[in-house]
Amino acid sequence: MSRTQLVVLGSGTPNAEADRASAGLAIAVDDRPYLVDCGHGVVQRVVEASAAGIINWSTVDLTRLFVTHLHADHSVGLPDLLFTPWIHGREEKVAAFGPRGLKGMVEHIQAAYSVNTREHLSAHPATPGGYLADVRAVQAGQVYADDRVRVYAIQADHGDMEAFSYKFVSPDKTIVVSGDTKPVAGFVEWAGSPDILAHEVYSSAQFPGRPAAWQAYHSRVHTSTEELADLAKEIRPGLLVLYHQLFWGATAADLVGEIEARYDGQVVSANDLDVYL
Image (cartoon, rainbow, N blue to C red):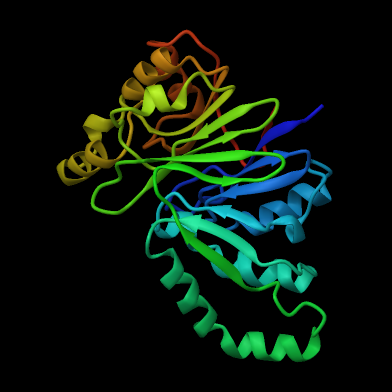
């Protein structure tokens, strides 16, 4: 019997917070993790979760990455992902999937850390490939499959940059991760009725207090609590998990309350190291 979990490694945003790493989720199928995004602090969260017994896997198991888009809060942890698990003993290349531009980003990271790589290869010759990544550009449709999961992508709408949402289908669960996006046509039908929908969100109640330029930006590229509640009413996920939450002075309970005012399903505000079955 398979067991699929959503592990929240980073529930935050570009704003550095004391208790939240930036964006990073893991879908773990029978303790094999599939990482979605890699913001700052995500690899450290894996170390913490493993040490606390929250997960039964470690950094060396981080060999599959799905990037929603190339904003820093979703990708600035890439050097950490490439090099720290390698030092811990990872031997396998990271299979990395994401927008066009991810390959160039990884190539520049490798160039920037070439001195580091050369020195560590001289000290750790037994793991010559564990710092490398096999990068593949994503298009809408099925992007990955193995013996435990199938992964599908749909084009998201995050302004001028290429962005994707991902759906993970395992033998026992379907989990959808929005990435950063405003509501897009076709998302409801594509998502189906997943067991878990992890979706970004900002506070509709706090929105009027934002500067005009920020209102224009966020309404163009992100999803409000009101919009997300309306999406959830159509999708009807088993559990709606809020992450990448823009509170703007609201509390987690306030954000959940804004959703629940329009949607009668189960909603939670994610914290780092939460695990959802």
